[in-house]
Length: 195
Image (cartoon, rainbow, N blue to C red):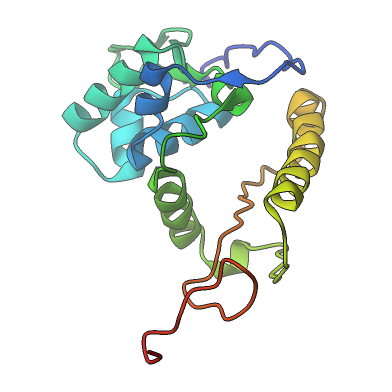
């Protein structure tokens, strides 16, 4: 049996970021939906294929896929004939989520971190190609500037990714956080053993 044809993805164009709507933010608030989006970004997958890859029931995947389709994060791919001769309906990610900003007044969801941790666990530590661990003393303005500069570089790579499709795929995350125990700076937290 011949390999099914892949739907041709339009080249990603650099766009302006915009705030996520409440519906979009809610759709991105579950780690399984984030994992579905990541998987469907690289290849068109059916509910059954997603369920097998994510080790969940097809009904669970169907629920999450419908939420993602409703907000435009997934679109139907080209229907194909499966191994049993049945018509399969795959989905592909639109890439819209990259160009969305979260609401600064809404607490950060754990979903992206949980999704990334599962992906890393599945890939194994030997899959890590590079990482940087650091400690910086930053004002709120410094944090905004660091984020702006990093996102600008990533935007450039995302917008031109279609030119590098023949290369291996990489996934990553940049995460900046305040340590639970810190003894320096005006925002310091007292250690529990101190009175």
